[in-house]
Image (tube, rainbow, N blue to C red):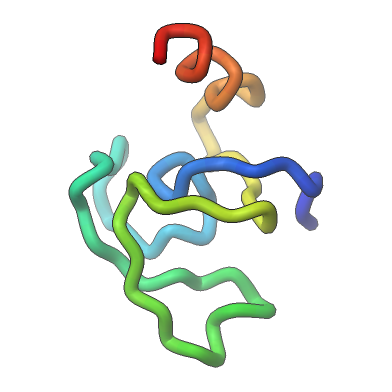
Length: 69
């Protein structure tokens, strides 16, 4: 379920990367249920508001990164 919070694809559970910690320049399929029918291939640095944080990451990962931007 989405928390209606914008986030980067590389931190999202729906980013179809096999990497444990995907990078911003990595490309992978978006597997978000609503968007998967479009077979979107996105970069880790892309993002949207259907974001759900990946398992193993802190829930505040996006706020933490924005503080250093």
